[in-house]
Amino acid sequence: KAGVTQTPRYLIKTRGQQVTLSCSPISGHRSVSWYQQTPGQGLQFLFEYFSETQRNKGNFPGRFSGRQFSNSRSEMNVSTLELGDSALYLCASSLVPSDEQFFGPGTRLTVL
Amino acid sequence: GENVEQHPSTLSVQEGDSAVIKCTYSDSASNYFPWYKQELGKRPQLIIDIRSNVGEKKDQRIAVTLNKTAKHFSLHITETQPEDSAVYFCAASLNTNAGKSTFGDGTTLTVKP
Image (cartoon, rainbow over all chains, first blue to last red; front, side):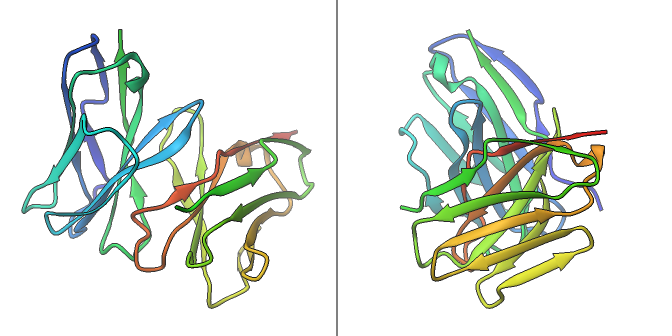
């Protein structure tokens, strides 16, 4: 069974631009969560989706948004990028929200 | 919201020794506690988890203990090997919502051969 995949793996943007990251969960998994990983802040929860519905949202500004499609694939969008948005963005999938999570390789976003 | 503290931030042990990493959490409603291992440049991988209906769980050289009263849980690695060197994260969440986990800041474990 293929693991969680994320595209693109690396991204360089400039301040003020917007970016869309994609996550394809393991086949059959309907729950997808997104996390931001930085050296200073560790792993911080962004959003959680299940069956196309956002169940939870972390403490991030409204510039961070996401969605989930009917095939469980998920995207997250960051608008008006700031230097502090530079991070590794990880998504994780699980069968259902109560099940163990499997992480993708992450998208490394650099904002210049 | 939930707050998870993890100690120590770095840990260096000799091959064959044991390593213990401790986490405390603040929300008494949390009842799912996974541990992840993240090697340099790789994704976090679940190594063991425990739910609040048990106090201890073991998988070969790895064990996790949970004290719900004191709101802390620990990871124990015995007979450490150089390939155990990595960053270890603890996390806490509701049993029904593992997808909304609060993570500790991580422990960098170095096992010296």
